[in-house]
Length: 169
Image (tube, rainbow, N blue to C red):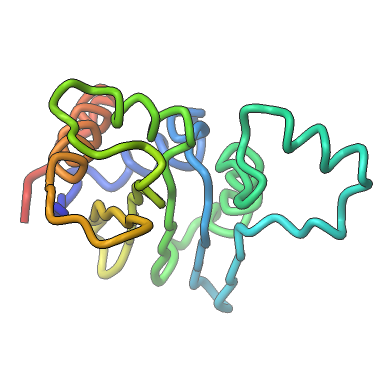
């Protein structure tokens, strides 16, 4: 687990809310505080879909647990845009199953993909600062830290690739 403070709040806000740079991630939750507090639960509601639609979701490469950030991003943007900055926000993103598989296939990884429950990126804005915190969860207790190290390196590389400056805190 690492915590990174993003330098240049405007840059991360553009990457997160305007561009599609985070669109491949899945959303566990988003909490936005402006004139009200808005809580978005990213868990898909199976009853909303027809049986055919749900079957298509299950047969696709996407998650049947969480919504994609691409679907939630416009709602969050509408809540945040305006002349005043939000009081705070928190977005909990998960790596898509394809990325989890890719990390598990890395020669430096000593953990099977089936044991990785989630690779998480928490993005928080509070008091004018944006912090990104990584995390991981497993289906069983694992002492090996290779997945965490690979995930942390991937997030650093991802943020740098988006042109975001950051420092570890």
